[in-house]
Image 1 (tube, rainbow, N blue to C red):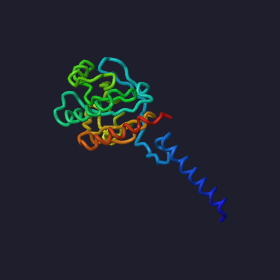
Image 2 (image 1 turned 60 degrees about the vertical axis):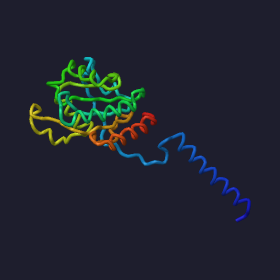
Image 3 (image 1 turned 180 degrees about the vertical axis):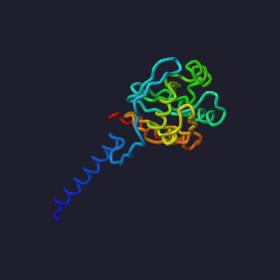
Length: 205
């Protein structure tokens, strides 16, 4: 191979590597295989702690975390919400981040009860939203959209059903559920925070 050809081969090789490097900076996920979503968010309509209607349109273009709990729980819920408070503190100043905490006992957790509970956490309820609504709708969303409870549990009468899930669902700006995390495990919650930061850097489709 002549020196001239060798020079041009090396030149274009360096140029290609440099171009690839620039793309990895400009496009954070360039060159990485995307992980298929766990699920996607179906249309929903619930009522928040202020009596306002919240639908899937309110979370369009947002990264958010969803959980299910109930305000009078003395079991796993306090630990879950303590860990969720860490998530809140990490992202409370992010315009494109939200937390949706759905009650699994709407017969107990009225709008007034949710507002009272939210006040005990001392959080901005524009960022951390507490939701109630029809039990069948809440449970269907937990199972079909967030996949934090087994759909097979939907075999009995809705009045006899009870979701008591410790899992958090992380949703990206496109409404795709990216991953499920154990809300009782500190390492899982730390992983959620790290993953949410990555999602915030991505643009919605």
